[in-house]
Length: 331
Image (cartoon, rainbow, N blue to C red; front, side, top):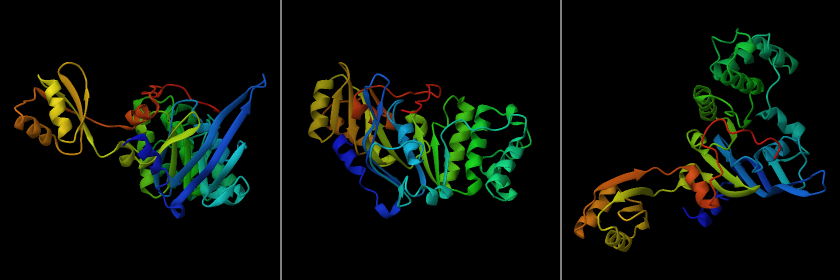
């Protein structure tokens, strides 16, 4: 999907179905030297109700700053924000009971068990003990809930943090880089937990800079860069319906002409290699070429992903591809 079309997707949601909505959101920081730094610039964000929405971009793109403004932890310089249709930060006291968030490292007592930590928290906010066991089951910590917190792996600690937010049974869960620093096993645990929560009807806003990982759990996504919204919509729409194939053929120049005449988008990739975008099955390509007396030596599908979409939009390879690339902090 071309960038212009992708930008239009951002306004494809019905406002009655939107849980998070921002218009013209801006945050400007002033450094000690008196310099003006724009962290979030005219951001229009719409997060639909239900499922998992990825909030994606490289480190320093403004994701954490946006989340902190939504939660009342930072004041916007300009623009408007709404949660569940209520203006924030003005109406935050009314909507916060419906919101859970893991933005910073949680503070649990290392010598107490995971369950005991949650029990103390539940009683401090007036939630019944039953909610603790339900939350532990939701994040798949049943069986390890009586282990001391200090013995938990990083992945288990993150799941306990998510369990803490579930004590008040939120309608919206905001997670800022929840897989940061985790090993592959921990990432899988968090991914499964997030996917299950979305399937249960919780709206999850998942902030991350690891697009390949997020693509596995998100129903929809917003991609930002330098504080601006670059594209937003359902993941399938962002990626597009066409399939890319890499083909090897002796007469690449003539194959290019034949495929282009047949309506395919073709890019050269060396003397005998072509990259072809096609909305049809691969046998369409082979038939068109065979009818012209051209025969393939290789045809390989190239799977589209969110990262390739991002690179097409920005032209820069600034996104991380692994789990341990650092947290953006308040930027």
